[in-house]
Amino acid sequence: TLSPTLTFNDGNTIPQLGYGVWQVEDDVAEKVVRQAFEAGFRHIDTAKIYGNEAGVGRAIASSGLTPEQIFITTKLWNADQGYESTLAAFEESMDRLGLETLDLYLIHWMQPKQDKYVDTWKALIELQKRGRVKSIGVSNFTVDGLQRLIDETGVVPAIHQIELHPYFSQRELREFGASKGILTQAWSPLGQGGELLEDAAVAAIAAKHQATPAQVVIAWHLAIGNVVIPKSVTESRIRENYAALDVTLDAEDVEAINALDRTASGEGRIGPDPAVSD
Ligand code: NAD
Image (cartoon, rainbow, N blue to C red; front, side):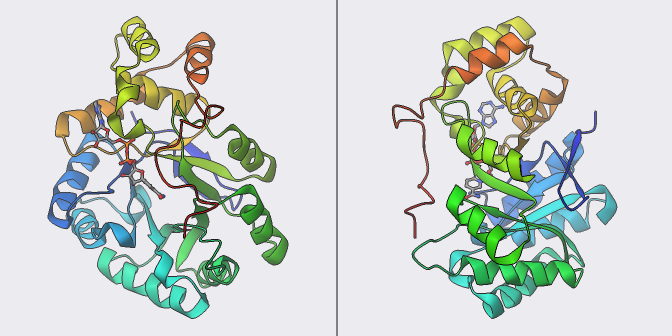
């Protein structure tokens, strides 16, 4: 099974299911990205700050896959925000990845106090004009921050990568994105593998589909239209997560998982809040 693709507002496409490598050492990244390719993944999510772009690059180089067959995302780190520094940081990432052209470049965090994200976005627009990157987007923004990028540049991000899992389902940002033509991409889609994968409601749906809890959660992301990038460094789980493509939830399952949201109680979020994180 190949992952379905979703289409960006710029006409390019992204495989809906990808593989993320946060907190994976460079050498391990080379090994597990190779395993992910073997499992069927064609979309890899890394970032400068993960320190494993070189390992991801080595896995790409030895994969036998062509650039057209794969989709690679990396991200601009906070300290590199600003127009000229973004252009320079991009080339350094590309050297580590060993790529001619990048599929997707993201501003990693909005950094509202630093307040350089509009100039940084202008640099991404320039990189796309020059053909160095096919699609450009952002991560960890607010509605106001997204609106400001659009108002000040006229260029709508292709995608917004945010913390999103059944306990923190980001309804407001998903709806805003949909209204503007911005795809939503879920980070920590499995809730980092904690309580969520033990949740009784998830377990019941897993039993019904003869699937695992992780597969059910990934299938939920796919069903609600998210791009999703689960991480694992265990080969059997990498394969298991990919096989979530074969799990199809019905409307009742999706509703039951939607009901797990903890946003209202303030207990859903695991990571930092982009609105206040600098
Ligand atoms: P995740 O939700 O993907 O959870 C990963 C953890 O879940 C694993 O370490 C493991 O403990 C467990 N797990 C994975 N598969 C499993 C399975 N089949 N069965 C049981 N347990 C399983 O968490 P994540 O790594 O935080 O997020 C995924 C990716 O999102 C990252 O690797 C990274 O690429 C991206 N990300 C981006 C940002 C950002 O700021 N843009 C932040 C965090 C993560």
